[in-house]
Image (cartoon, rainbow, N blue to C red; front, side):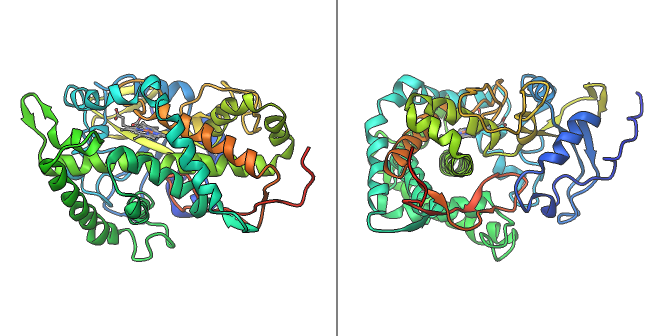
Length: 417
Ligand code: HEM
């Protein structure tokens, strides 16, 4: 094995909270891609019990790892850079995102039929009317917070309707999902990351247990009923597998679409010339959605664990090592994109925001794309001159990459082209 060459990036600790205070560290990632595309971080200061990890930062590197589930397991060590500092590994492994084939494939297959573009397209009217309803509630207001007042209620109702949650419970579920996903952010989990396991996860189990009991008694056509009645190899899922399956769908549905909408809307307000293109030609909106997914992937990373000694882009990796895939970096890989930091609504790019293919490619792509298109279309139609009103704030997290506040002035002051 060859020793890695030394670079100025030796000793850099990629997941430290300070590095993420203002969103993903794009300059650091650009240096990593250029100097050391598979980079070693020695430790996580906040969680001394956690081992260090390899960072994979290029498009090609992430592509290679994602398609080789035999060498890079999602099950062995969990799915984020932290093995069990926030959520115990056993609990993570009850979700199919943290399983390897064949069990992963069998569980995912239960849902895949319902998430095809064709099946999802049948929900377009319902989703659009949720968006319109939420925008209607802004009537008479001059300002709002796009995260709390638009994105959150829309995504919570859309995924809530798939899961069979009554609308009056949306807010409480949204709070729970955000707390678990953004654990560690001082505003979202003021009790510290440990409060997630002490308070939020038990509440998830209690509430989900009530829903499971209801669906066992009288099944409906929602996804909670699918989980409760699912059989894999002739056996029903265990209760904790049902709860965590429910959590996976709810969390993925809530957090990521909200993140992409808000980051994309902020970019449009910061680049009025790009917004003018969409107002003049709304058929560009699907391209703007893809560009928002590329530039602002809602999950900064997911993680694999090496199942054997191997080599990645010339870097030896040992069995058991953590391998972290930085989508926030690969989506701006200059070998792939011209001017990767430029927001260009006409680019219609391929990207890795939904993963890089392979077994764990996002289940919800069609739903996310439809929701985002409806959100962009209706928001631009209703508030074409919306402006930023004060600074937006990022969630402090190296995992979920999203804004926690985005204050806007709804009618704006600028002339509409
Ligand atoms: C903008 C929106 C979204 C983004 C950026 C996103 C991103 C991702 C990514 C990066 C992965 C792959 C993880 C890996 O490689 O390990 C993933 C997996 C997944 N996503 Fe999404 N997602 C989005 C929306 C949704 C929605 C709306 C759902 C619907 C319920 C969903 C459900 C899932 C599920 C179940 C998985 C696990 C798939 C597997 O392990 O086979 N996602 N998502």
